[in-house]
Image: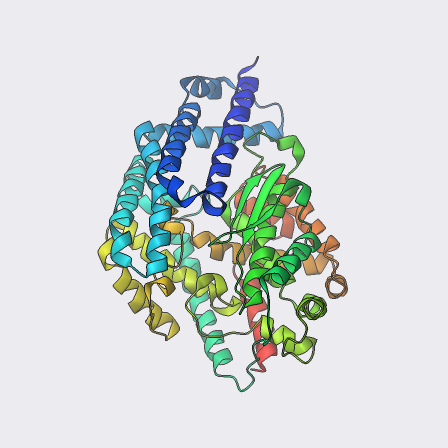
Length: 490
């Protein structure tokens, strides 16, 4: 075989094993017995050792120096393979295995600490995770920014400086909009009524199908922190149920369906190759956020959802579809990122971005994180954190070592704003479809413009090609200001 064919065959096996490891992670967060955590950590470490050996195989380096791509797809495969090889050969196998082992155990320790509001229980583990990630970043950075080295795992081509500058441009307008909305005379009411577990799950399944999720290649389960897992023909989603707040379940489901439809929508010709996954977490998040917000929380779609909610739960306390639209998009002071409204969500991300950069640089020590979080939250949101589970313990990300991941949530919102601007340009009657509960045209546009390409292009190029213009934050900010100024009459 040619060097290129050898790379393709090698990547096929590596991709398949990575999917197996992902399935172990899914099981750990959904159905694994609590007592299996230590054994699972050893299993994850063992599999990571095998994967690391494949990703750093010296033959792969030889093939990469010899390979010639037959076409544009081949060039993209070589680009990903080379990037992966260069990054993985910088990280010692022992460190890669130790990271897999420690973060597997850390997730359970975080969950215990969160349930007990016990920061000291989590701190030793957090210290260990941060130390390992800083060691990995040092190996990758080659004297450059430690944080940028970690960010590259999730958003290739982006830097912390670029993201920080974008956040600096966004923050004043978001804060001004929040203050106008929270001070408005018109304040939408919350729903009232009984929202049983079974009813929420039935409606979640219906929403998943409405947004195009293929249950023959996936499943819906419960998890403490909703997530999507897998690619190709096995893409699984999770949600969570709060009987006092049905939107938590329903919109978590729509959000994860956006991730899952991206993976299910990738061209099958890319299966078992480096192109068979979403190209970056920012682009991935653009799909989940446009499904959840610009489509799912639109006035048109919530009109359809209002009728489905009444069918399932009876009286909602909302007299009509317009009141229901207000309830879906209600802005209120709160602690939890995943439950935040569109106006304040990115402010949550900016807080985490600044804190995790300081943790990785060493400017902030883990033992000081709780106080730093609480001070920053009070400053940014005007509310004092009442307990750790509403503060630094609310997210799973740092326990599993995902430093550099958080800013991609806000970048995904920026990309989603651009995509929705282009989608409305190309589908001028999209609101008529949404009002009928018909997502076919909208999700088809996203599948054709973004999802089917997988890793073929670089992240920013993927969005630019779909939109027909270079992405920036202006479409998102304009969308938010128009929507919430109208809703709150400010």
